[in-house]
Amino acid sequence: MANVNVPTQKTIYSNNINKVVDTSFSNYIPPVNTQITTPIPTVEEFFNNYDILFYSIPQVGNNSHETLVERSSEYIGLDLQQLLQQLQDLQKQNEQLQKQIDTFNIW
Image (cartoon, rainbow, N blue to C red):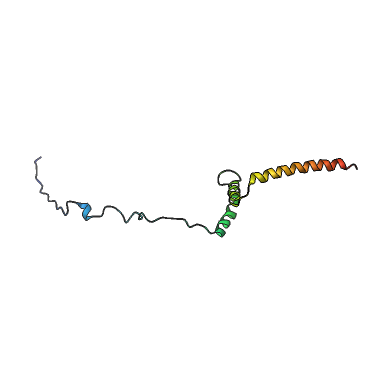
């Protein structure tokens, strides 16, 4: 097979294409300053959602009814441990008083 020279011609429009053509694809990427945010629900919307999710929320553990009670109690300054202790003390006192009443009833 014979060697054949094929003439080629190359046209160069610019030695630095980055100066001529925008290669950053900026029109496909959201601008850096744009933030996609979820709107914060109103208090009414929160309670509507809470009513819908009520039975889906675990009773104890992370993100549970227990968590809601603890956070809300802390926020309003309610000491749950103190209340539980008072309840236990009153139950003991109630048992003691009931025993005293039972000893007085001789019927």
